[in-house]
Length: 262
Image (cartoon, rainbow, N blue to C red; front, side, top):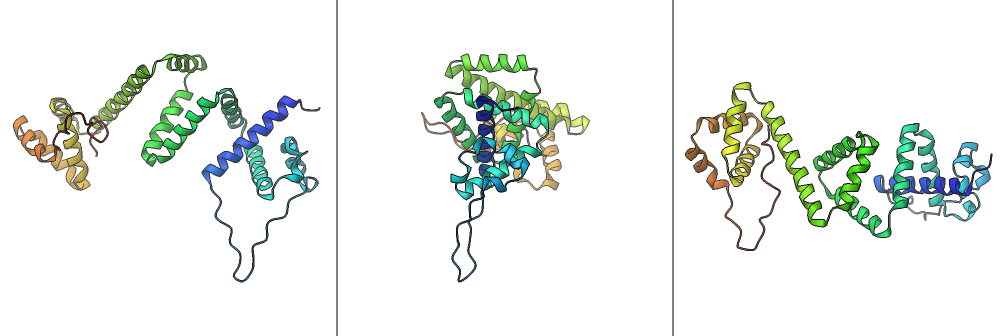
């Protein structure tokens, strides 16, 4: 049965999307020639020499295949192989992502590229937190995901910033609670009261102090703080609190309310 033009365009777009993802994830190493020999360009691969499975996957490019550069032919063949190996649920996710991309305006695509660029600049730990958040979103019912997208789209820029700040605060609160639950039972509530009694700069100084201590000394340092009274804690933390910034300048660094390290 012949494919429709729409299906062909969709298949071509999906393969090109896979090519782009492969190039971003695994940049090829620069080609080098053996000593004393020049590097000849690879020869193009005739469409007729492809396997039956490859011709089926690459049919959208059949008419122009012979004119494609060999490097692009190779990338398309790798993308077709990846597509053939994907389980149905992964194919469905790729198709959905491609359809959403097609529906974006040029401005929205530029914004998405910028977010992807920022994501790649994150530390591995930050990237993993983002991935977990995305996975939690995917597990929501479709109607709930649509409702949240619609609400976020209709927000004014200040509302979006407030929403994201609230989400970050909730994430930090959950992380702190997990840390407290990891402590011995008799320390949890005293530690919670101590952290709640700190001013934000003191919480950050306490976290930095624990982080700077060797792992084997952190339990003793934590218990030392629990034995102190509030004035002793303040005096102990004061050397680790930076002076306030000049008027009109924002202090650097992330919010100080994250959980102390183990």
